[in-house]
Image (cartoon, rainbow, N blue to C red):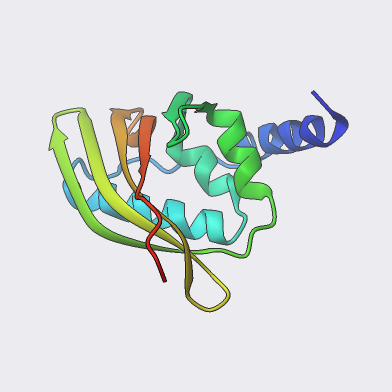
Length: 147
């Protein structure tokens, strides 16, 4: 681990202990959709503290390139400077007791609206400690389109 990633890891751990995670979230589809929207804004605003509440400690995501990302990689990525806006569409949430998932299309935009990437992803949530926690995700990249 290099010095930069060590700093971010320690910084993110300190954020995790700075404020309690919100509890008492509704166990419904609307709550999951709201979480996904907060997640997108947190990435845009480089706010890993929000993701700290959303991602379970055992979170893992299968990326479109076949690589696996864990919680610490997602938090570090969110803290990095990126000039990207995310548009989410076709958010379809489903809740089954303490389990839920959301399927979404996400478009990454740069420079005032130029599409740089379009993905379909699924995030899987478990309701623990009075709140939804994302435990896994999977992302598929749409083929590039001619412009």
